[in-house]
Length: 85
Image 1 (cartoon, rainbow, N blue to C red):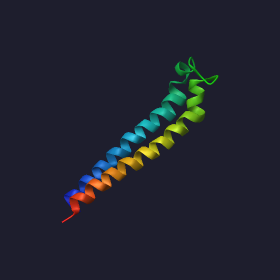
Image 2: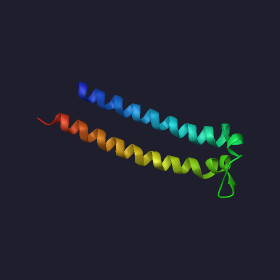
Image 3: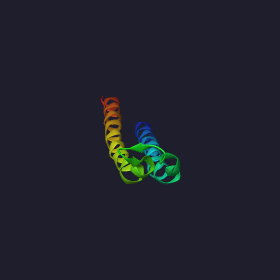
């Protein structure tokens, strides 16, 4: 594997790690660990901890998918330009 390919996969893994940490924090942290604190805030009549556990983590997960697509398109484009002779 070339150095360019190696750098590509390092950046790809870094993107994945960051986005998975965000997903874990929102789904596990906000939905379970911090739910008692977040329940003091209400969104649409529901406690915020409950909202994160039921819907918020799903919305964040879908947003993460779109962010990953944008990041990978930029990464692919930058490495395609480097490979041109």
